[in-house]
Length: 584
Image (tube, rainbow, N blue to C red; front, side, top):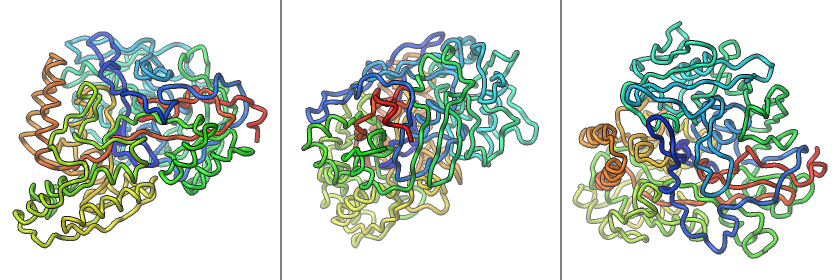
């Protein structure tokens, strides 16, 4: 996801969607063996571990952030950190991930559903039974019809940006535009209040993994406010919204009708959660390093800034409060393949050769927290390590880039613009410098993180280059390459994933052939081969595989980075050591 699993991942927002487990026709098994955990970095002792011991119930957990959420509406929520926050605190989905650090954090467990779904008709039909006793924040029952309604509203053109698994797989979804005109999807059936059946247009053995996404959370029709629902999702989770002042503060309080007996994942330790927005990133780092007063009970939403790293790693007591789990996402420079000069493959290849990935690694926090990317998909989809598909030096090859530009009729180079999240300004400068060595002059356009995906998702108005990333939703190439490079799902607005606007008939035909394979081992190898074939056509230049460094206050307990949520804190289990210290 960039958001996505997709979708692209801004520096302060580890994107797009999460890494889970692969599914079988009638049950699911753990795909963690395919995940790249790698050797622990000695500088990052907390990788794969929980910090702070077991929390106690009560107190206020504060989240310090330099940005607002992109979306909290479950129909639109496909940025990886937002999905973590939304699905762990505000709404539940049919299936979810275990709340455990390390090797088990990608295992699927039932959430609203009684099990992981039952398939029939050759994995074209999936049936889920909802648990009894599920209620919303006002005590009214959660029904299967509410899940169906949110799936349907996710098709609305007024609610862009969300996961599109429903559009890709549900039968009869072509041309559907949501329930506003009284139309409903016949392929989503609710024979009773506790049963929901999905009819797919083709076999999809991995469908339970998709039901982790917010699309499969319930929304009662009576509470729907269209685009305004983003400001006040109706809670089916352990917390509800007390107040939400955009770009300033979000306050969550307990949902008194959430029943722990129906929920094996969420612990709901704090009484309140306060998200303070609009802070400067270095201000957040300094406050958490000092960890005084209310900041002792605080965590950071976004990554530790590179310039703050020495302040943390040189102080053992502070370093002990640093988490840095792998994001399992590939950050890349995506080029607008439908706009000159990037409609010329030689120009795009010149960008690949000019890019100094070592400089980007340094700008992203250094080699302790990042590795240069050598392929499109992350190493977890290659059995543990990315292949060096193109063999380009990590520092780039500007002379080869100049040669390619000359062959493309651009011997003097050209000027272009790159859009990045504000938090990636240093990365953009590294890209600017490295491409400049080949004669490509880059103008940087930095955008507020909360508006980043809307900006680059406007295919008519966006810049020629964007820096973003993608995270697989679960260990399958089907959750990476089709979302980032299938031209059939490009949208004029709210476009997500395929930010290179890559439309290549041979690539799309091969994607369909691989998707039809019944042998998962054969399909894995085919996705790996296709990765190299796409990279040779150069719609994107892979840059970095990152970890997500997050600093915690001294009063935080039960914290760990959840790889399936891009290394973000798992808000299902986090809390305070001393709740009295965290009251405010």
